[in-house]
Amino acid sequence: MTSREAGDTAWVLEPILEVPHVVAAVLLTRDGLVTGYTDALTQPSAERVAAITSTVQGACRTAAAAFADRERAEVRQVVIESDHGYVLIVPTDHGSCVAAYGDGEVRLDMLAHRVHSQVARLGEKAMAAAPRGADGGASA
Image 1 (cartoon, rainbow, N blue to C red):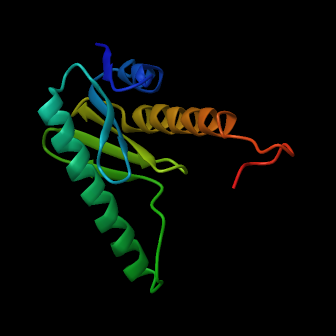
Image 2: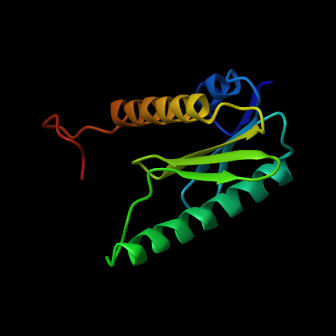
């Protein structure tokens, strides 16, 4: 499987697909726009997954805050277990998100480790590409 992307995102999704029994993955913005997806999905399916994933994350942030009796909460990951397999959703610190689906045979620990590793790499790349001001600091 390969990644279909809008931009250079294949490096994020390809290693996730190497985990046995992973079927598909999507890279999306926090507001639900697709920035990359794997061949197992059509573009309409990837867009649907992204929209749903964005909604699920919002609901999970609200639920976590409500349970903690706080104004807000940041979600580190969301795991959905169904009779078909697992969906793992991991947001990044810079407004994007990786969602991956593995069938019922996937090892959730391996999937989680790989997705979190790729999210960390994505964050490192975003930080390395951050614009710098004339004084060497981040631009305002």
